[in-house]
Amino acid sequence: MPRYIDRTPVDPAGTVEIAGLPVPLPYGLVPRDFFRTVEDVHDLLHDLNSLLHERQYERLEELLDPAGFSGLISRTVANRLARASRGLVVNQHHNGYPDLLVKGQYPGDAVQRGEGGLENKASRYPKGWQSHGPRSGWFAVVQVHLDERVDVAAHDLDPTAVQAVLVAKLALEDWSWQPAREGRIRSGTASVRSSGTAKLRAGAVWVAPEYRPAHNRLTAEAKLGVLRDELPGLVAVQLRESGAATVDQLTASIGPSRGITEAALRPRIQAALRKLRLENKVRLDTDGQFAVVE
Image (cartoon, rainbow, N blue to C red; front, side, top):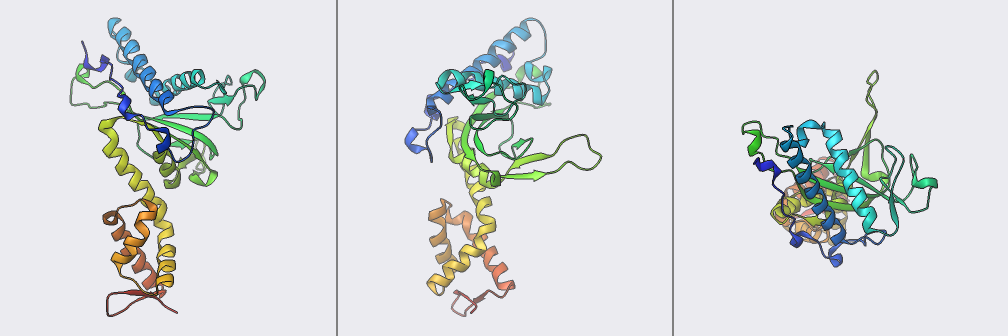
């Protein structure tokens, strides 16, 4: 039998404790609901690909285009979470936003663009998630791994599996917006900024244990992305409050409050100091300490 038919086990050890979340989940949902959702996704892929192989079709991942495959996963997630939450129902409007509505908020539980609820995104990418427009509200990103190698036999491909489920409430400023180019058919695209990625990574409700190191690395990268634009101002404030400080002292004072390791933060501190010196806002004294230029 092809390897891609295998059902990937879902490790309950990947479920995050409620106390470990930065903010409570909405609508009565708990992390275990998302663990059960991952089980449903893996069951669906196993059952469908088993039937397709029996009938001599290609695997589902080849029969559907990327948008169609992601849509199937998103719909499966929406159906499972609607059963888990007393307050949510699946949006009955075709391509309506969000995927899950507050029960009874709209006639027939259908709306083209509603408020509240929970939007689902299934993606094979670890960041750069997109939408048709910047939107504030609760989002759940289901990150999946598809084996798309072309140098191995199709029967030897690994089964598609969920790597992580990330949940957070995003604000409009957590999105960037790229308008459609003149003459192009495609509409504009909104992409999640580093601030939104950091929120989603911090709100992980289930992470496959073998994927945890990569998840932690991506979390740190997102935090650094958020910090990048703020860092020169933070350094200047720290120097003004302390009078003078070395790179190591600045790193030790700023890093812990942001949950960033000193090794990752130090080169960013140095870059911020170079920028401030070029702007003649900071000087380097002979003792290796930096100070604000008054």
